[in-house]
Length: 334
Image (cartoon, rainbow, N blue to C red; front, side):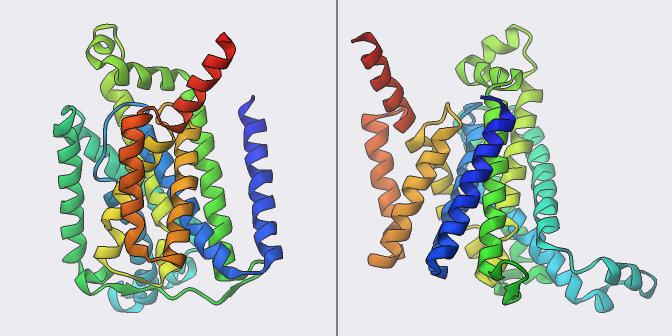
């Protein structure tokens, strides 16, 4: 299937989902749907580095938080131009700010991608558990910086109050839902395009045997840097709308452990070697967590993730996609 056709199918499915939710008329569906879609983007972002290249990133919450705080920074700057900017620059900045949220999403992606590039140069010469620990340490460093940066709220947090309504969409949550649908389309198209390109083949050689790939002339460091940039950018784009979704952001919510855990668990449960794996894992786990939040408590969300992850690691280490491929292989032989 061509990429253009695949993109069109995703757009049509997204439009059908939006109008179905709008027809039902319950805004909770948009709130819950936004969270599930956010996890689809994050799981796909993690899988580009962790699944395709085999480099497990424990610092994914840090890249998500970069997107979050890039929006907080731009929002705060728009509100305080007269206080923090020289008089000569105030008029031009007032003409630009406040930035539309889609522009903030792009900015968040660029900033997170650049941080991913820097992280890659610092850590990608490490392998295995050493790389994983290094990414976790970098996330801790990022959180420490944010906690001590008073302009974006520091440890006390920051309020980001969205408008009540948006033209055509109505309630602001519907606008956020559509924006996240667009990001899901971007993430899935990007992951599928990478998987089917020479870049994806290069990533696979790194995952299977990096030393052999280097000996064969594969530019492994360059490919890994591309993976960290793309993965980081998608994480940043997923995080940029979050302040407008939640209304109040503090470091504990932006750097929440659940983002890192879910970003790893969802691709592993769905399957890490195929673009649809993170999508399946995120839809399954994200929906279960939303149902558990309403019926039981949000405190059981990580318990659900842990139990499912243990079960799949033991019984189906290649995830749901791996089970499907195994079943189809048996059918073909019979």
